[in-house]
Image (cartoon, rainbow, N blue to C red):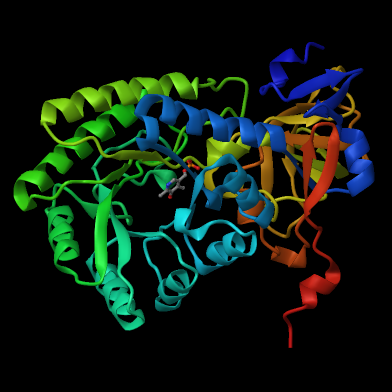
Length: 437
Ligand SMILES: *Cc1c(COP(=O)(O)O)cnc(C)c1O
């Protein structure tokens, strides 16, 4: 059987029918670290981070900046890698801030997002020296201004603007539309009003605008449409309030390939296209070129991740369907349950074998929605003890993992230059009961 079609990212190879990831044998790694197991390819993470960093610098010089949206995959080592690569980070909670801080991340390069920052989180973020707050709505701005006043600081802020763009991806991850729960919309006049409020607030400094139109975007035209609306908005704010925008963040969202039928994107080429358009548009608007930020999450880490499972129950319901159960499930990969997301599932040690059975690959949680993927082609003699690999699991897996059914979360093992190390250890049964009084 030809497996080349399954090797959807350049860090995947087949050696004698065994899947290798980042040049390392997945069967050996499963043996060494146990399953379920999250593997991450550190070189791939760095490579993707550099594509954004270098392309934005190439296009905008010292006004081009890449941030990593850390919610995609958040643990101390990730923040340390981003610091080493010179990226800033987006954080959305005290937990992410605490993790970045504990990793020694330079907090002045952290951007605090979220549509609902609690009073605790606002105060905590200021105490940790988070550089910039990305403010979602007027009440939040009032709260931030008040806390900054109490602390005697002037907090730099950006405002999250809703440009009203439908990015034609999944509804649940589509955030740039006018009726989104995120941000202040331009068309309703809310965006202009919050700018006025920020300019008048004594304890914050307005340093620019942010928008994010959604996720799994494969098309530059979505960003070009966003730039179009946002630069018009910058011009409007200049004309209305005499305000010169210092920073413009056009969001994250570039898509990744989960299955062979999805495209790959040349991210650098796409950024160059968007940058060229932005320069023209800014010149035509007669405004100063702001610092430009992009804040990808998924496209930095997704295909740097892979999950290994051991097969347990194989159930063939004659005349109906087949199930292959694995030793993890929605607890380590909730994305099929949440979005029906597609995944590539491979028999990791028998890549060359005929795949003459169709089965639903399911987890071990007491929940019928605990599905990794439907209708997966696998060898008909698949049996207990065999190794399965699920590709492209670096984004929104570990960071969305839960302890449902009191299942311990898998470790994250990093692969780098032929070696491996534990970045997050496996949760133990002691960890599971540790919080119970
Ligand atoms: C989630 C998110 C991102 C990252 O999106 P990806 O699709 O992972 O690139 C960037 N910015 C904001 C505000 C987000 O909410």
